[in-house]
Image 1 (cartoon, rainbow, N blue to C red):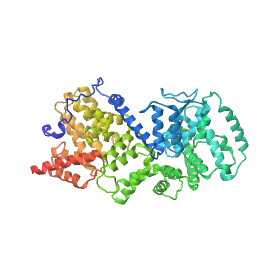
Image 2: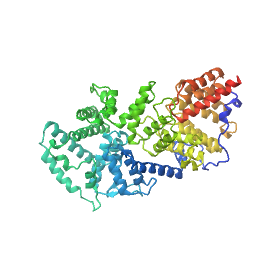
Image 3: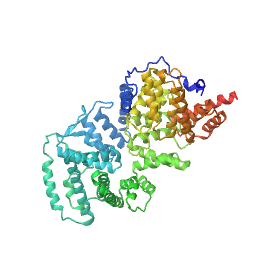
Image 4: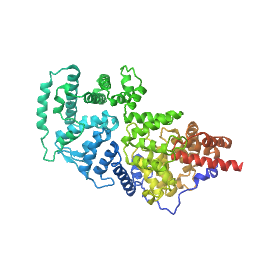
Length: 600
């Protein structure tokens, strides 16, 4: 292999040495994963984060005057709770969190307990403020709100926390069992008319009423939280079962279904797993029969486990998800929107876009990302094509927002923003306050933020490594760049895996790479890159770098005609679907093709 013929366009640094990169002292020659994460954190820029938080707060504050939805209240609550873009204010955080919870935002119900603390469970995240309540009240509130959050679709974090609490100490397990007993008894009384145990439960309720005030002072806000939210006091649950609305019974059945599923995950229940899964399906069926939208989603979400243990479901997983979406479940709408958006059918693409717009009311990250890329599309008239202002706003909000539980890829917007600022794609926005920062500082921040979240997309690893490699040629820095590329090779996306191998080959082929220049390793990396990239025929980025490998004979036999065919296909037959990264590489392929055909 002749390393002098390595893709010269990519070997030339597009980063001016006049812009100073943050100087970071490195002392480890062979960094492990923890070293890499700690090193990467140093690129996260506090002023940039503050600016983003301030922009998000201003956006949601303005939305209060224009038909606010659950995401408006939820993210305003988080701003006031955590001091994002505004000084922390416990009362306003409570007010907006309750508003979001009452609109059944799963994240708001999940975070509701963070506004409270108790003598045995102090707030572990100072300087954030919290209301003081009794230990019993705090446990009751946390279990009830997490269970409701999980039942609405926040299964990743809420169920994980419930599982953790059940294994933490007996007090938490007792509270879960206590709530389970109350809910189960209510459902039995509703469907079977069995009131035999009601007197015993009422005596338990009287005992608990005394516990409600134990260890609490005058600041105990627990009565207020139950009065002002969809959560119910225990005494309310001991009424005549006929007094409850169908919606309340359906919701409790749905929660019991999730609770049985959570219990099936406990190691101590391994021998009863099938039985618990069957009970979960029974409760979901009861809830669905009473028109509980979330029950349809939960049956679709847990479908594979339900079927695995021999349960018969006459409706398919897709039909259940479609029914939940039609009934207005935002996470089901996201699932269908994600599937339809990249369909070959224009009608299904339109349907996918509509589903994503509907589901975006919860303001989750990947949902906003998909809406943003829809605004950047140029291929169909039914999208708000070329609306870069809306796209930028959605992407910035996505960085600020929490990830959707059902996300196929997490925090993809971080990479897109880093790439866009690095390559100056959006300099026309004179109102963008982030442009006050150096573009490489912005890019490094967004790449590093994605990496430190340890999410399931490794492309930021490659681009942060490339930034480090181009702007800091110290031997210790190159070792971290190589480690980042090696981590990126773990990506399941063959286009990313191949690109990581490609960049690794570039690093080893760099003659000025101190102790890292190694033609043999470079050739091996390029060969692996070609193997992976050749297989991703539907990916612009994968095919672009495969064409570059063929064009320069990197690790393979040079094949210029085949490289030209691939570039022609990228330019004329592939779509970027509004993705700025893919669009940029498609434009780059077009320039490369024009240059090569003019030479011919």
